[in-house]
Amino acid sequence: MPNIQDVLARIDHEKTQTLDELIELLKIPSVSTDPEFADEVVRCSEVLINKLRGLGFTTESLDYGGFPIVYGEWMGAPGRPTLLMYGHYDVQPADPIEEWRHPPFEPVVEDGYLIARGVTDDKAQMFSHLKAVEAILAERGSLPVNVKFLLEGEEESNSTSILRCVREDTEGKLACDAVLISDSDMLSPQQPLLYYGVRGITYMELEVHGPNRDLHSGMFGGAVANPLNALSKILASLTDAQGRVAIPGFYDDVRPLADWEREEARDVPHDEAEYLADLGVEAGFGEEGYSTVERVAMRPTCDVNGLWGGYQGAGQKTVLPASAGAKVSMRLVPNQDAAKIAELFEQHIRQIAPPGVRVEVRALDGANGVLIDTEGPIVEAAMEAMAEEWGARPLRVRGGGSLPIVEVFADQMKVPVMLLGFGLPGDGPHSPNERYAVEQLYGGIRSVVRILDRMP
Ligand SMILES: [Zn+2]
Image (cartoon, rainbow, N blue to C red; front, side, top):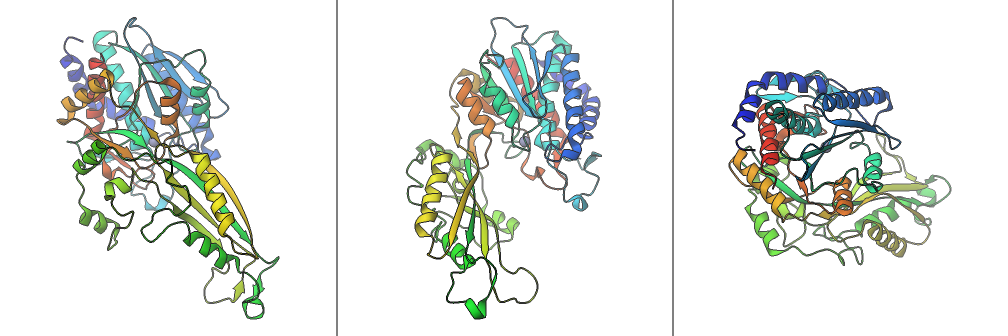
């Protein structure tokens, strides 16, 4: 586009309407994990379909067995590249409801922040994409590139439908030259981030069974293996004193960090004292030789997430429980295979389980870590666009969480996947009083305009 000032001016003039429209979207309690809200999730998808249709997009509600996937395309720029924009319109449950200062689905603006469930994750960010396209179309009547929207309603449950949708897209409906995802944060309003990798996960559950009933520890203790004792030994054997995972073979496929990655990790501002104070702990913990920034996103982990067995009530009960159990998750890094890690975990448990107990091991979930190629002219253009808006080029970082959709996009489509988000560190996705800075909303819209404008 010759000059985008007119588009930016329109975004500026329409700030109030933009905010009001987002507030309407936030009022829909599109909680995908709770069947009670199923109708609301569907209603949210309909609002988005109508929105896209109103913008002149060809739309479709895609059914892969779960909640509708909102699909829309505008292909009026023949010969130009196609950008696919992904987002999700479902939200986390609002619990614990009593910790909200305002009802979670009655958005309010407080000190420059919009407060509502799902505002940063991901409605406001997804909405930035829609509004950017709307502003360009209103000003110019056409877009500088072809645009496809793919908005799912199951990101907070399991993304089952969209994973199928992308994997089964044999006729190339979703074909594109790059994917843009805004479902992440920036370091500050002056420092955007480009996520070039996410961790994978292997989630296991184990149960240790001993005697056929709970026993009196005074009558049987010492002669019968105690499942809780056995479980404790098993869990203690999973990591060493530094938190390094002690399962044989666990690190075999871990891709070592490149020099540039360690350098850029050092460039991420991090105040360890502040970090620890915020968490209320006296000392950090983790694998020797790695910084906190590296530990939380670039190295694999093993954590017990839940533990049960025996007596949990007040006072004492001298019981030797019949069974005990634990949930264990391992965050994985690129080149580790989630299924292989599940096998290694199970083998290790079988190896060390003491005699007298029977151990059941189940894999609950698995996703591989991903590294995204951040080279090439499209990513470079997006980096420049972000720099223009926020005053600094995005730092390249890895995310510590898991995002299965990224792996599928990168794998199936073989195009750059750009994880450029507009949230801020204090937004509290999934937490009570989730928020989003109103200025980030407008900055996000302007960023997407600049990205579309600069696409080579
Ligand atoms: Zn999200």
